[in-house]
Image (cartoon, rainbow, N blue to C red; front, side, top):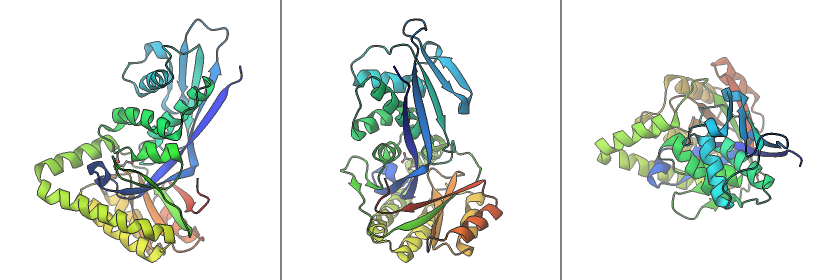
Length: 317
Ligand code: MEV
């Protein structure tokens, strides 16, 4: 039996992070320049039912039997077994790797889970739909992120730009005019679990202050939806600025994020904001044209550890 290989992209949130946890809408898109891959290598000579997991990026090289049952990889495998009605896997090695920066708000955990679900279900001859894959990955996201909204697993499993509201029908955006984005990593690792938990504490202490902020962010995402479809960069830029100021009120920005945002705006970006959980991770900047070079250079000069460009267009998958 040949090895089976599956892939899943990274993602960025364009509008609405954090508020989306409180049932407000948010917009996200896949970023296919970075991705997670999982290879299933069948072990024909190995001992019976031995599953080995190798994830060199996180220095993991372990038998499934020795992994804590609550470990995200163990839960991913259990989710797959439940979905396909099996009680164990045949002997195999899972080789997992990713070019998505870890703990940077680009969906690395969801992409790794989804690549693994895809590889295993293809290997077992029982491929799942994008919706089924997303639902399984959501269970694993709860381990990584505590109380996730589900937007990361959804956008990565469907590989389409989405207007997402937890618990409501999800809209796949039909883009008419392209927009060009620069994603810049602060190099500061961030834990989405911690930032989401901190915002949860704040809103529990002072709901009268924080719920209106969530609502304003939701309104921004709502207004951004049409602007994004129509490629209205001026309006998008303005909405990004408003979204960033509200994220600052949620205490999830950081001095480094602020510096990169200022650098992008000074270099001609029409808008810039943090993307994902915040307090580190990535900034996204919207470029006025396809030529993103001056914004990329300014971000690197301001200390970004990596920049990635991506275009949101009709053909974006
Ligand atoms: C994570 O990419 C975005 C957050 O809104 C958390 C979530 O939606 O689960 C911060």
